[in-house]
Length: 250
Image (cartoon, rainbow, N blue to C red; front, side, top):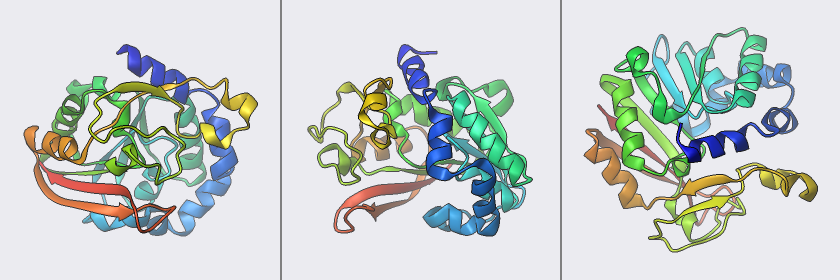
């Protein structure tokens, strides 16, 4: 495991289980919401799936299972790949309460077991801001390509690169040059939800933020056929970009 991956793992295993309980509810309560409306819990991402039943989905950095469990309820065979044992604990407790099975591999995404998972999945899916955890986007995209069967689909949704220069999502991260290639330390995503005493003690993550062209070119250069690139408004200000979704085929 690379040094920066170890750093990010330490951050994501600091109080994460309690954070999910605080913000998403007790596992049984979260499961009830997923059971009531799995399509609704997928939100806009439902529009990018052609079908669900028996579709093998790799949910990359799937965190607490907030999208994996609705997908499984709709019939998909979902495996989460994530670096945090704390995330796994919450996700599996929600899945059990929802009476659904998901796989969960706690690992560095860059070290996924390709003897087991190469050309295994119909869909690789990621959302919620994960690309900045990887210092080499080409290395990351190469692995995404390897996970997919021929003809498989990647659904890559992430924070819009515009957030490099303006905090349009109110994540309380510093602004920088849009074209910066700097690797920097910053707070983990949910640090801002804790009081200052706890927040000041939380481990930092190691980040590298990308431009639109870096993201698109990494998709193309690693063998994908890019089919769509959608931009979505910020949840804080609908006049400004907040997220994007790229859809690409192997």
